[in-house]
Length: 373
Length: 67
Image: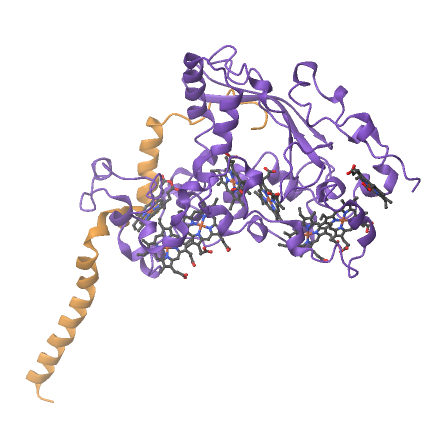
């Protein structure tokens, strides 16, 4: 997406001040501080809070929006807890090395948090910021300016059909869904539980909550759905190929500016075993995605910093946003049953990562046998 | 209507109008300089140009691939 021009990023529409009776007439200093009587922009801004909703929103938004702010600090967009935890698990146990990893994390990963303002008032900073609509508060965060400007490598292009040869998600194409059609404010605002993994979030959407008929006689494919209930995830049959990334390495250049380099991306489809079955994800078979982190992601900062990399798999359970009614693997029973090429096998995984992925790789004997249909 | 009454009337109207105009400015004086500048694209263009020269780019041009 094209960046806003520098002046557009900070232009405030007069109608925000005159017409938004809830926020606009509170006065800029109520939220931002600074000196409103000083006509010199350089000194007037001293003490200004660029984002009045981060890290603490209780004294600004929280005065009125007590519900939205209540669990803010447990929202994964605020804490980025899963990032922190998984990198910690993969990190060397040596404290000096850990320190360096933390520095790298701070610089490259943890800037990608979101705040009330970053969803409702401005574009996110990692996507060059700037006011969404000249400071007008948007109830529904805009899909492309907000959500997919952060979720812009995998989920965004998949959902919108921007990967060559792969159509848009059926929900986008048929019903013009946006992210917020399925992802609610309750999920985005947090619910007070400190989740360690994004798939633990209890308020996340579920396919069955809208598709109530898939297991009933009203459904059009009830028998097949019922046979596979709780054994095979919906995406295993309904997802088209999705993006897999390899070798993301981060560093800084001569000027001290940050960069990342990813080696390769590949559109692919793989079924793996679910290493963490839970109530919301009881299935044995799920889609898995190769993630960009590897042993050397932080090598610019420290050698062997991620020495415990293999504590966790790097083919991870995923829920691709490439849903279609008809997919290559569901076109017949035996497009899937007995089709070894779509199940994650030992050969798909580099040797040094096999141990890490042992709970995800599908042993040949678990691949369902052909049914002759 | 006699002239004097007309004049008083006029004076009255003008005073009310003046109050109506000044009141909001004084009431919201708090935001005046902020709003004055942030709602004025011409000013913002000039200032952001000045400012942009001092600002380094955020990300290195050495970036490659997808994040």
